[in-house]
Image (cartoon, rainbow, N blue to C red; front, top):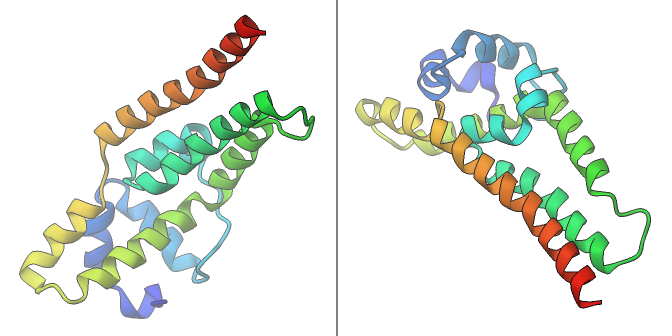
Length: 162
Protein backbone atom coordinates (compact mmCIF):
# COMPACT_ATOMS: atom_id res chain seq x y z
CA UNK A 1 0.00 0.00 0.00
CA UNK A 2 1.26 3.45 -0.89
CA UNK A 3 2.41 5.91 1.73
CA UNK A 4 0.23 8.98 1.29
CA UNK A 5 2.78 11.54 2.43
CA UNK A 6 5.53 10.39 0.08
CA UNK A 7 3.94 8.60 -2.90
CA UNK A 8 0.77 10.57 -3.60
CA UNK A 9 0.71 14.26 -4.26
CA UNK A 10 -1.66 17.04 -3.24
CA UNK A 11 -2.80 17.57 -6.84
CA UNK A 12 -4.14 14.01 -6.91
CA UNK A 13 -5.95 14.55 -3.61
CA UNK A 14 -7.47 17.82 -4.83
CA UNK A 15 -8.62 16.24 -8.09
CA UNK A 16 -10.11 13.22 -6.30
CA UNK A 17 -11.75 14.87 -3.28
CA UNK A 18 -12.98 18.08 -4.91
CA UNK A 19 -15.26 19.56 -2.25
CA UNK A 20 -13.76 19.67 1.24
CA UNK A 21 -10.24 19.04 -0.04
CA UNK A 22 -8.55 20.93 2.83
CA UNK A 23 -10.27 18.77 5.46
CA UNK A 24 -9.33 15.43 3.90
CA UNK A 25 -5.81 16.53 3.03
CA UNK A 26 -5.16 17.52 6.65
CA UNK A 27 -6.72 14.34 8.07
CA UNK A 28 -4.92 12.01 5.66
CA UNK A 29 -1.53 13.65 6.27
CA UNK A 30 -2.09 13.44 10.05
CA UNK A 31 -2.96 9.73 9.95
CA UNK A 32 -0.53 7.46 8.11
CA UNK A 33 -1.94 4.06 9.11
CA UNK A 34 -4.17 2.31 6.56
CA UNK A 35 -7.00 2.04 9.10
CA UNK A 36 -7.18 4.94 11.51
CA UNK A 37 -9.88 6.31 13.76
CA UNK A 38 -10.86 9.92 13.19
CA UNK A 39 -14.34 11.15 14.03
CA UNK A 40 -16.33 12.39 11.04
CA UNK A 41 -19.73 13.86 11.91
CA UNK A 42 -20.99 13.68 8.33
CA UNK A 43 -20.27 9.96 8.01
CA UNK A 44 -21.81 9.37 11.45
CA UNK A 45 -25.08 11.22 10.83
CA UNK A 46 -25.56 10.41 7.16
CA UNK A 47 -23.75 7.00 7.06
CA UNK A 48 -24.88 5.27 3.81
CA UNK A 49 -25.89 8.58 2.26
CA UNK A 50 -22.43 10.00 2.96
CA UNK A 51 -20.90 6.93 1.36
CA UNK A 52 -23.09 7.43 -1.70
CA UNK A 53 -22.22 11.13 -1.78
CA UNK A 54 -18.51 10.26 -1.73
CA UNK A 55 -19.00 7.60 -4.45
CA UNK A 56 -18.23 4.64 -2.23
CA UNK A 57 -21.07 2.63 -3.72
CA UNK A 58 -20.00 -0.83 -2.58
CA UNK A 59 -19.69 0.30 1.03
CA UNK A 60 -23.01 2.17 0.83
CA UNK A 61 -24.80 -0.90 -0.48
CA UNK A 62 -23.29 -3.02 2.27
CA UNK A 63 -24.28 -0.55 5.01
CA UNK A 64 -27.86 -0.59 3.72
CA UNK A 65 -28.11 -4.31 2.96
CA UNK A 66 -26.71 -5.69 6.23
CA UNK A 67 -29.39 -4.30 8.59
CA UNK A 68 -32.10 -5.24 6.09
CA UNK A 69 -30.71 -8.77 5.76
CA UNK A 70 -30.66 -9.14 9.55
CA UNK A 71 -34.25 -7.86 9.76
CA UNK A 72 -35.37 -10.47 7.20
CA UNK A 73 -33.33 -13.17 8.92
CA UNK A 74 -34.95 -12.31 12.25
CA UNK A 75 -38.34 -13.08 10.71
CA UNK A 76 -37.33 -16.66 9.93
CA UNK A 77 -35.04 -17.47 12.85
CA UNK A 78 -36.41 -17.03 16.36
CA UNK A 79 -33.09 -15.92 17.80
CA UNK A 80 -33.13 -12.93 20.14
CA UNK A 81 -29.54 -12.09 19.19
CA UNK A 82 -30.47 -11.06 15.65
CA UNK A 83 -31.28 -7.40 15.95
CA UNK A 84 -31.12 -5.29 12.83
CA UNK A 85 -31.11 -2.05 14.87
CA UNK A 86 -27.97 -3.18 16.69
CA UNK A 87 -26.34 -3.93 13.34
CA UNK A 88 -27.32 -0.48 12.10
CA UNK A 89 -25.90 1.13 15.28
CA UNK A 90 -22.57 -0.69 14.80
CA UNK A 91 -22.44 0.52 11.20
CA UNK A 92 -23.28 4.11 12.16
CA UNK A 93 -20.61 4.32 14.87
CA UNK A 94 -18.05 2.48 12.73
CA UNK A 95 -18.57 4.96 9.91
CA UNK A 96 -18.27 7.82 12.37
CA UNK A 97 -14.89 6.53 13.49
CA UNK A 98 -13.55 4.99 10.26
CA UNK A 99 -15.32 6.88 7.46
CA UNK A 100 -12.27 9.01 6.72
CA UNK A 101 -10.07 5.91 6.63
CA UNK A 102 -12.44 4.18 4.19
CA UNK A 103 -12.42 7.24 1.97
CA UNK A 104 -8.62 7.38 2.10
CA UNK A 105 -8.46 3.70 1.21
CA UNK A 106 -10.62 4.35 -1.84
CA UNK A 107 -8.45 7.31 -2.80
CA UNK A 108 -5.27 5.22 -2.59
CA UNK A 109 -6.85 2.48 -4.70
CA UNK A 110 -7.97 4.95 -7.38
CA UNK A 111 -4.70 6.92 -7.27
CA UNK A 112 -2.67 3.73 -7.73
CA UNK A 113 -4.79 2.85 -10.75
CA UNK A 114 -4.17 6.37 -12.06
CA UNK A 115 -0.38 5.93 -11.89
CA UNK A 116 -0.36 4.36 -15.37
CA UNK A 117 -2.51 7.10 -16.91
CA UNK A 118 -0.77 10.01 -18.66
CA UNK A 119 -0.70 13.24 -16.64
CA UNK A 120 -3.02 15.01 -19.10
CA UNK A 121 -5.82 12.49 -18.42
CA UNK A 122 -4.99 11.74 -14.80
CA UNK A 123 -6.90 14.65 -13.23
CA UNK A 124 -10.09 13.78 -15.13
CA UNK A 125 -9.72 10.10 -14.16
CA UNK A 126 -9.37 10.99 -10.47
CA UNK A 127 -12.23 13.51 -10.58
CA UNK A 128 -14.57 11.02 -12.25
CA UNK A 129 -13.93 8.30 -9.68
CA UNK A 130 -13.79 10.70 -6.74
CA UNK A 131 -15.58 13.89 -5.93
CA UNK A 132 -19.20 13.93 -4.89
CA UNK A 133 -22.45 12.58 -6.29
CA UNK A 134 -25.94 13.79 -5.48
CA UNK A 135 -27.33 10.92 -7.55
CA UNK A 136 -25.42 8.54 -5.26
CA UNK A 137 -27.37 9.97 -2.32
CA UNK A 138 -30.67 9.62 -4.17
CA UNK A 139 -29.93 5.98 -5.01
CA UNK A 140 -28.96 5.29 -1.38
CA UNK A 141 -32.20 6.85 -0.11
CA UNK A 142 -34.21 4.69 -2.53
CA UNK A 143 -32.31 1.54 -1.55
CA UNK A 144 -32.70 2.37 2.14
CA UNK A 145 -36.46 2.76 1.72
CA UNK A 146 -36.64 -0.55 -0.15
CA UNK A 147 -34.49 -2.15 2.55
CA UNK A 148 -36.91 -0.94 5.24
CA UNK A 149 -40.05 -1.92 3.33
CA UNK A 150 -39.05 -5.49 2.45
CA UNK A 151 -38.90 -6.77 6.06
CA UNK A 152 -42.21 -5.05 6.85
CA UNK A 153 -43.92 -6.59 3.82
CA UNK A 154 -42.50 -10.01 4.64
CA UNK A 155 -43.62 -9.73 8.27
CA UNK A 156 -47.15 -8.78 7.21
CA UNK A 157 -47.25 -11.54 4.63
CA UNK A 158 -46.07 -14.12 7.18
CA UNK A 159 -48.73 -12.93 9.63
CA UNK A 160 -51.36 -13.11 6.90
CA UNK A 161 -50.57 -16.68 5.84
CA UNK A 162 -50.28 -18.06 9.36
